[in-house]
Image (cartoon, rainbow, N blue to C red; front, side, top):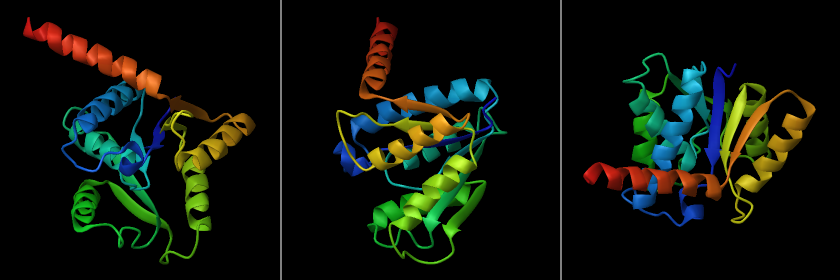
Length: 188
């Protein structure tokens, strides 16, 4: 049974999403919500993120909204290092702070400011070591920063009994098409 899941994937700019009101976000959040609901029904208790812009922040927003329906669901934000948002623009920092305020647990793996890329790799390993499953939104067709974590994830899963769900654009597109079709049907 999966009790703790790490959800990660593309950063918003890697998906060419630069505004919080971009229509793609609505569909990605709906997809994430659907994925999480099925995991919750199977016993999911905690969702962990590192607090990266994009998939992780949208996941946090989904978890926060799901708490109304699933009050036992918990959100943990495990940052790679202290002040990891200091170079973000003000809007993104505000969004992050709102999530931190509603998170059930916040911590950083490294209790120091940025020292080097090793901090990201160690945090990725920490997430694998402290969760039962990872949901990774990543597609080989659009290579970006999650490719490094994907390699680590696949190796880890092969060496252990770890569960991973690597979500491709095809899976997301099928979901979106079904969602749009059902929305159109509801207007008839």
